[in-house]
Image 1 (tube, helix red, strand yellow):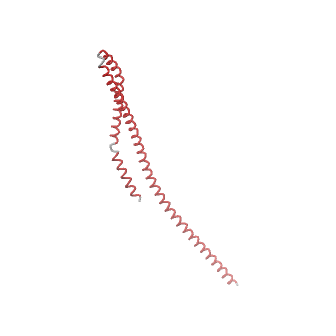
Image 2 (cartoon, rainbow, N blue to C red):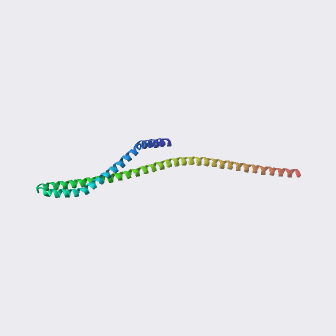
Image 3 (cartoon, rainbow, N blue to C red):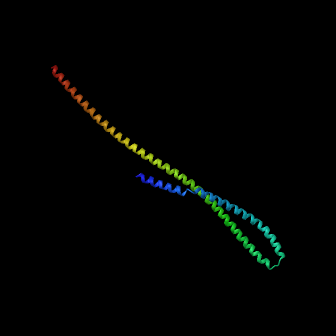
Amino acid sequence: MANWREDYYAALVARDEKEQANSSLYDAYTRLADRTAANTALVNRQQTQQSPEVAGNSVSLKTASTSSQQPQKQPSQSSGAVSQSTLLAARADLAAAQRSRTELQEKLTRTTTELDKLRSKTQQDSRRIASLEGERTHLTLRLKDRDEELRGKAKLLDSVQDELASLNLQLNMAEDRSSK
């Protein structure tokens, strides 16, 4: 009955090994993606900090040019800044999500390892319990046999004592007859 469980467990372990075969590659890629996202966010942050200075210089240069061109350039710069800030926020969110994913993946790996250890220990404990139950059953049977044997010997001893008392009584009666 336990044989099918062992086969099932072995199949699950084999499946898990196949699924985890490339986990180091996935983890390395995730770490690389995290670093890339963090570096990209840092570069974008630096560019954003430098952009107001450059934008200020270009605005002063634009004021020297015609006033009709200036209103057209400012909305494009503000929409560029908005899209740039949106892009930066999205990249920061992506970096945070990838860090979170990496942490969760590591936690999942630790939990899976601990679960496998506990399953192995549980399986060993189950075998030990089955062995001890078998030994207990064997010892219980031996104890019952010994109790039955002792009861038989006690009956035999009582029978021998009764026989001995009967023979002593007959001997005494025979001695009394012979002395008369």
